[in-house]
Image (cartoon, rainbow, N blue to C red; front, side):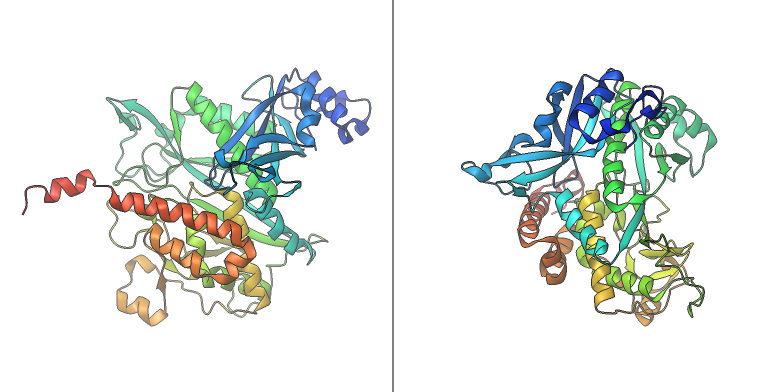
Length: 465
C-alpha cells in the first residue's frame, strides 16, 4: 500500500523502514507525519451509501480488532435483531485501504468488512463481493473492472435544483464552455483522486446539461468498488465546498438523459494473460470462448441483474423502452450484445465487455458480485450468447427485434426484484439471507412508490371524470 503525503507524493521516501507498513503502529506513524488526526472508518450499506464513524488515529488498533462497533438494526438491510450477540455489527478495518483523504486535510479513510458474532457477515456488500472474487481466485483469475461514473452538478434556483442557465444547450455533449465553467470542482476532484492513486485520465461533459463523466484507471473488482466509493465521497465533499450539489440520481430530469455507471470488464490469469482476448474469433470480435460464455451468463441473468444494477424506482426512467423525452438515450433496454454497439446491454470493445446496465445509484459491491456470479454460471454451463447484434436497436421495429430474439429488460423495479427473487442460481450465489433482505427492502420501496399519487396524475385526472 502506498500512502500519499499532503502533496500527493508517495510517502515511502520519508520512511526509514518499509516494515512500518505491516503494523498498526507503522500506519499510525506514517499518518501522523502527514498530520492525520482522525480516520473515517467506512462501510457501505445495502443502498450503496457510505456510512461509518470517526476514530482518533491513536485508536486505529481498535477498528482492526474487534472492529468499529455499530448497532446492527440501525443499518439498512442487515436484518439484525435489536438484542443479543447478533445485534452488534463490527466493521473490521482492511488496512490495505488506509489512506489520507486529500480533500479533507487531517483525515484518512479505511474500508471496513462487516462481521457479526465473530464471523464475516453474509449480508455485508463487501463480504458478498469478496466471496465471488474468491471463486475467480480459485481459477487463478482476476476480474478487472473500469467503472465510468456519470453525475450531475446542480444548484438551488428558486427552490428547484438545476444546472446553471448557461448550460442549457440543445445538445451539450462535449461542450467546451460548460466543461470549463466547472474547472475549480474538476481540478480539486482530479488532484484528490490522483493523490489516492485512482489516476484520472479523462473528463467530459455528457449528453445532459450539467452532466459530467470522470474516467479513472481500472482495478481488480474489490478495489474498483472501494475506489468508486472513494470517488463519491470526494465528489460530494468538494461539490459542497464549491456551492454545488453532486447527484448520482439515475434520471433527475425527464427531459434530459440519465446517468449510467458502465462497467468495462476483463479477466487476467496469474501470469497477466488476457483471458477474454483471442485472435481466432469466428465472430471477428476478438473474444475468447471464455469471454463469450461469461457474457452469455450476463445476458442469461440480465433480468435479475437489473435489480442490482438499477436498484431504484428512478432507475427505470433511464432504462425505459420507447420514446425518450430527452430526445436522446444511450441506456440499454434490450438484452443482447454487439460490436461497439452502444444500443445493446453488452458492448464488445477492445477485447473486453462493457456492461452498460448499471446506473450511478448501484451499490458497486453488489453489482460487481452479481456480474461475477452470472458470468461464472455462463462459464460453468458453457452457455452461448448467440450472434452479435450490430444494428441500431433503437431504430428497429418490434417485428425486427422479435426476429432477432431480443428480450426487453425489466421496465420497473417491481419486475426486476421479482426476477431476482426467481433467479435461484444468482440468489444462491449471493446468499439467501442477502437475497431475502434485498428483495424485501426493494419490494417495499416499489410498493411505496406505487401508492404515491404524483402531480402528473392529478394534472391529468383530477377534473377529467
